[in-house]
Structures are given as C-alpha cells and as structure tokens.
Length: 294
Ligand code: RI2
Image (cartoon, rainbow, N blue to C red; front, side, top):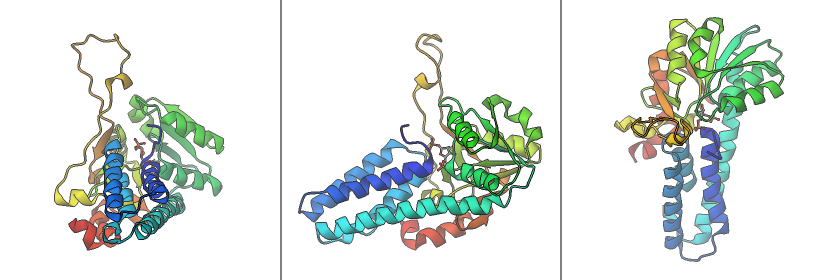
C-alpha cells in the first residue's frame, strides 16, 4: 500500500525489473533469466487484482527468453521497462485530453477512490477553464479519497468530500461519474476499488453518465479464457480496532468489486472512447495473438 493506483503499481513493477537488470553483476544468462522469473513472480504476488501489474511486468520481460547473453538480456529488459513507463505516462495524458471533452461547463462530477487517470480528466477540464464541481468519496477503509480531495483542491477545483454511504443521495446533484480501473475484463466489466459498483448502480438509477478512465494495459487477456479476476481481500485490522468486536464476529474486507458492462456508458482509453463491447477487439490489437494465446 506504499504505492497506490493501478498505473503507478504497474510502472513500479516494470521499473523494479529494469533496475534489477541494470544492476545484475552475473555472467550466466540462464541464471539471470531464472532470477528475473523469480522477481516477476514476487512482484505479481504483491497485488493480485490489478492486471496492469501483470501486463507491465510481462511487457518488460517480453523476448528475454530468446537472449543469448546477459548483456543482450539486460539491454532488452531496460529498454522494455523504459518503453512501458513512457507509454503508461503518455496514456494518462491522452486519456485526460479525450475525457475532458466529455465534461461541460457547469458540470458536477463524482469520482471514487484515487485514480490518476480519472483525476487527469477532471483536472484537464478545469485547466481548460470549465466551471466544475467535484464530489469525491472517502473510500474506506484506506480513505484514498483524502488524497483525491487534496489533489483537486490544490488544483483550485471546487471539491466536496462525502462518506461512501452518501453516494446515492448525492447522485441527484451529479451530471457525470468518472472512475479509474484496476482491471477491465474481455466482456467489458470493470474491476475497481470496492464501492465502484454502487456508484454505477446509483448513476444508472439516476440516469447519470458513468465513464471509466482506463489505459489499455488494464485490459485483462486472462479473462478471455474464462479466468476470474482475483479480488484481493485485506487484513481485518483495516476495518476494526483490536477488541472492538467479539472474536466471534467475522470481518470480510474485499478491496475491489466488479461493475457489469451494462452500467458503463464508455471506457476512455489512450486510443479513444470505446464501448465496453469493444474491449476484445482492442485487446487483440494491443496485445496481439502471442500474448492472447499465452
Ligand atoms: P490509476 C486504485 O486502486 C483505485 O481503484 C483506482 O480507481 C485504480 O487503482 C486506478 O488508479 P489500488 O490499485 O491507475 O490503488 O488511475 O488499490 O491511478
């Protein structure tokens, strides 16, 4: 939890492998490749839900198995890592440019948790001179909403913090919802911070547009083959203090939830705005046959 946000997590995983390659002092290429594989598995185990990490790590190690010397492998991993990080940062900027066009002067926006992609869109609309107001959820238990309201307020945006259970009652004042993504499945469902699906339901009920801001490396190739997205569960200490409830009370602390495609108006990617039904086509274009088969 030191590094938060699916994009930042992916860039951190990729950068770690790049740094490891840069600093590797051995001369046996097979040993180097084995150590990289071990590092890959350790990094992936750290956050099971965000596929951005999986895609970032695999993009960084792509082609390394074919390298015949440590120097070649090092050069490839370092360059793959730099390329991934650059593409990731550019994607956030592109999403901001595209998404900001969907925000009109006078709009009231609702966002959830702390997504750099969604905040990029909102801040770009404000930078363009649009008069907007933003409601941001607290996002228990880690309260990443505090990061969000600090970011928005320092950009000079009219910002209101609400508790998560106020979402439905606030929705009647909202014009558009913008959220980020941890993973988007092949059938266009969104896996994002727990509570996102409640925003989507309330938005649907109130006929408020619901936009997902997602770089395409948050699209999950594994879901194409029927794999479920693992929803990370975290420690009960995030929810209750020691002794606050009897030991007989079970605590369930899922960190993410899934929003079905039918509640999503559009997914804003660096390639443009797409419908949830287009995710498969974009995946094929982005990842190609090789990774989709793998
Ligand atoms: P960006 C965060 O979760 C939130 O769920 C957010 O919507 C999502 O990542 C995407 O964030 P976590 O991975 O990549 O920090 O847009 O637990 O910053």
